[in-house]
Length: 253
Image (cartoon, rainbow, N blue to C red):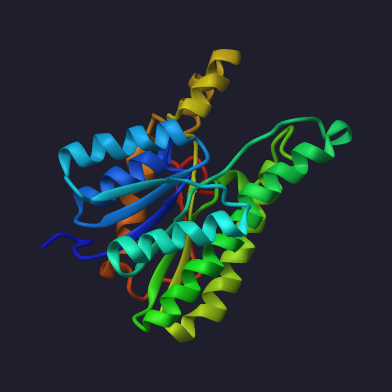
């Protein structure tokens, strides 16, 4: 029996990187999923690739996590297509970097709209559906190890990832009575398109990150996805309100 047999998942920000890895890995472990992203063409491409290997397992939709109507349609799609929702993965996120004194308010608002408000809207609407179903559920939010520290230029990104950790605790506290668990995954450096772009601008950074990681290499998206599989499964049935750092030991302190 697969760890996620019979489970229906909602996954946001699934068009690339960690999000697409979570979608693929969940399907491999027996789940079905509705995947969303603001990038319509890429999310449809992911849908096609997954369904080619696992027919009928995934439905894709264009999604703006900061818009209540868009998220409501996303939740309704899952219920209409598969009859229920067992798991939500809040993966959609954006990053903007400027010095604190110069940080533009428009960029600050964008980061919080996607990273924090998006987590709130998606979690509210998915949790309401889980409460109606009466069988509990699981919410996993992809924060970041950056939420535990300060980085140059991180006025919006780092603080928003810290806010996600705080919001997760409230969700765990208030939703536990309904059997809904809420946990955060905090990725360290992970080999995604976003990080590769940073490496192109700062070629020495990859070596620096590897040298300060006890396991000697940065993560791949599958490392983060495997952690999500565990948290979404019954193996984690008594884990809620927690944060799991997946960084190869870089953030152990």
